[in-house]
Image 1 (tube, rainbow, N blue to C red):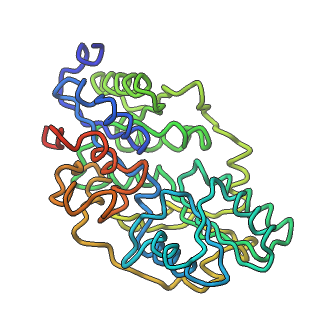
Image 2: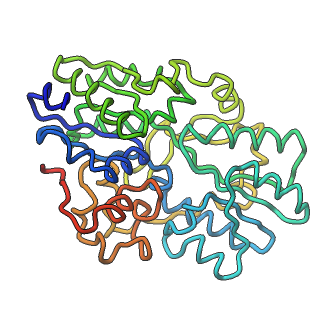
Length: 352
C-alpha cells in the first residue's frame, strides 16, 4: 500500500466530517493503515454539536399548540435535558420531518392559521438553503414562518482543537461538502498558523485513502498546506452565489458546541433585517439554558481525545434506543457508526 511505503513516523490525522467517519468505520479503512498512522474523529456532525440548551428551546417551541415544528429526521431522538422532539410528538405535538427548509415554507403557505417553525441545523453546507427560505419568506411577507437557527462553522472548531494543550492532531481531512459551498480559502491561515496539513477530501473509501496519503506525504516532507483531493466537486472559491446569499441573511456570532463549549465566531445568526424570522425571538425562548449530561463523553470523542468504545456506557447504558448523547443518535455520529458496524469489536483506540 502506498501509505505504508511512505509512513516512517507515527501520525495522528483527524477526519472532520461525520460522513467520512461512517465510511472509515464501515469499510474498516483505519484497520488497513500502518500501525503508526492513527485516525481520530472530529466535530463534523452538526446534529452532535447542537447544544442541549438549543434542544430544550426547540422542545419548548414544538410543544406549543399553535406550532407546526419541522425538523430533519435525525434531530428527533437527540436528547435535551429532559426530553426529545420524538417525546413531544408522542405527547401530541405537531412535529414533522421535512427534507429542506423550503418544505417547511410550503407548509406555512398551506397553513396560514398556524405558526410553522423549521429547526435549521447544519454546517456551511445547509446554510444557503436556510438563507434562501428566510429570503423567500420575507419577499412573501410570510408572518407565520420562522426558523430556529443552529448553523455552525467548521474552521473555528478546527482552530479550537489545535489550540488545546491536549491536542495530538498532526493533520486534517477536511469535509468536502463544506468546501463545495465555502471553498478552501479559510483553511490556508489555519494550516500556516498551526503548521498542519489540511486535505479537502471526499467520502468514498478511495477518496479518504487518497486524502490520507496526501496528508501523510505532507507530514513526512515537513509541509503544511491546503490540498484538494475532492477537485471534482470543490473549487477554491466555492459556490459564490450560495456564499453571497448566506452573508446577506446571516452574521457570524459565537456559538456553544455540545461537548466542546463556546467557540468565538463559529456560528450564524440572523441579521437584524431578518429578525422577524428568528424563532428564538418570536417565541421568547432565548433565555432557556441547560446543563449537559456528565456521563456522556461525546465532547472528548468530538475533539479526537477518545473513541466511542472507550466510553464505559457505550453499547450498554448508551444505545440508539437509549442515547446519552447526540453522537449515538445522529446518522453522522461516531458512536452510531461504531455501534452499527463494530459492536462485536475489536476496536482501535486513541492509544493505538
